[in-house]
Length: 175
Image 1 (cartoon, rainbow, N blue to C red):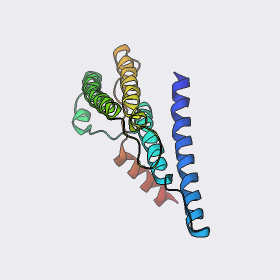
Image 2 (cartoon, rainbow, N blue to C red):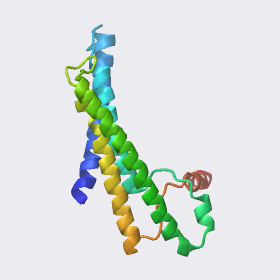
Image 3 (cartoon, helix red, strand yellow):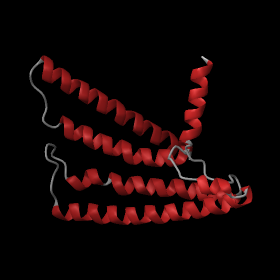
């Protein structure tokens, strides 16, 4: 799935680049030329939404989401895999519920047929990123579940902010 991995990274990068360029352009137009575009903020918001929903999937893939695993760490190593599989299944249930709600929301917006405030785009087309993003998240959790079941990994890899902070502090004091 290297293609999906790279696609996620490219989408996130391009959204960030486009948001930065649009914001810079708007600032220059406003403060140098005393003008601007009315649609810039709305387009930046749309790009930000795309970046966020693709970024959630990316975060699951690279293990950068914060998890509360203090109790799991108290369990013997042999139990970590079972607990991790349960956590992934519960995460898939949650993703399924959100995906269901997002799909209903997008279909309601399709029925209503309203456009964005400043751009001539139907709102439902922009909101499609929600179910698409959560399908991507579900796919990432299924990948993790497969790795747990086959024994390729023995536990979830979550971001450990406390360990990262301690490592950073140790590096700062060493310098």
